[in-house]
Length: 377
Image 1 (cartoon, helix red, strand yellow):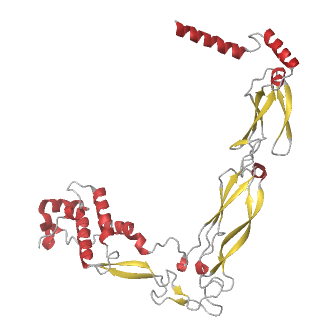
Image 2 (spheres, helix red, strand yellow):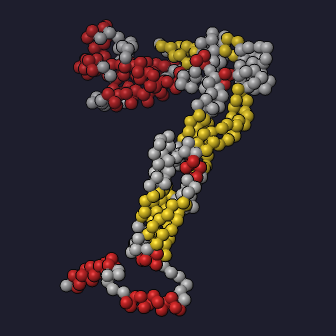
Image 3 (cartoon, helix red, strand yellow):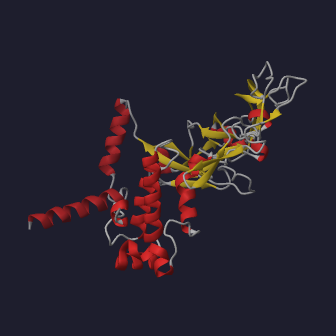
């Protein structure tokens, strides 16, 4: 009986590169793998065929021989390559790990002795800008799984102990034959722990942990920024039957402030100032987050939008000795609800004003007039 063309088996053209071959093999191997098709002889045979095809085409020398002589290149040890269906090592073992890693139980979440690590927990904490400035110690309550005190996390009733798993002999892994090779996977009886609880604890029902609300004290460092994550190692959920605990992550959110906006270590504050103060000059006081007051002097003729820098009055830099600055931006406030006398005075002031009093305005409208004259020409 003639054998199916290797390229047809994998569903690729004869010019397919290594990436295309690997992608095609992955899809077919996942489809026909014996573990996904138990007791299906046809799928097992198909799997052997596509593996044989891939082993030949992925090797440049074998592929060249196949392209020239076809299947005859490998009959009776032809071309000195040996049987195409054998494992040449290296390449196939790599793709095997890639393809079937999830079938092998996934070892990442289990620590020594097959004990599953507890889950990581998240806690959202909202603080004020003042608290971010000074730092604080916060007491929080977190509902979590903790080690059962009755059985000390073993899962077994006091006076008894877990038994070695008879299925895997305590290794937590079993081997299963799949066609012409075997696969190692997590023991289904003990879930990789290597032991089983025959007489479970009445409080935790054999899990080795119970759900409780746990109180913790969290240190929030001075200068912490919005969105920072604080990791508390080992303060997460307890692992099953004495497994290592997960971690607790505190996600910090800083509430918006009534007066200050933050940009890194610097603070910004926009303050409305009377038109006369900006024109004649003056001063005012501003409160800072360190519970002090700073005096801001406004020179005569200050324009709206002008910023004044108060050095060292910003936020502390977290875990450093430096501090940011506070920037005060002044904005002219237009007078409202004028009395008759005030209107008269402002009108008189406008009449006696010159371009020297408003150089920016005069310059702008002068340039605008030139622009309009140019359009008319």
